[in-house]
Image (cartoon, rainbow, N blue to C red):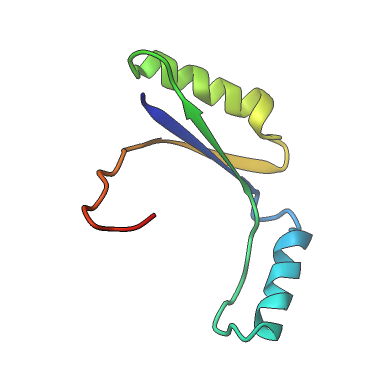
Amino acid sequence: MPRVVVDVMPKPEILDPQGKAVLGALPRLGFSGVADVRQGKRFELEIEGELTEQVLGEVRQMAETLLSNPVIEDFTVSVETPVAPVPGAGA
């Protein structure tokens, strides 16, 4: 079954207090070298049937009208390709 991923992020000019909180916590936890953090949302949609340009267009409409707030957020739509499991690799 095809999976379409919608990633939603705050626009660059929008403040991201959650990202700033994570950025501040990283050094206290012993992690260094991170210059900035932006926090967003990820939606994974499993699509019934064939994945066509029309279906991708409908997913873009979903992202615009429900999954994101276009005033303060940007989104990207991508198709996730399933990866075959590696023999002997644990979960």
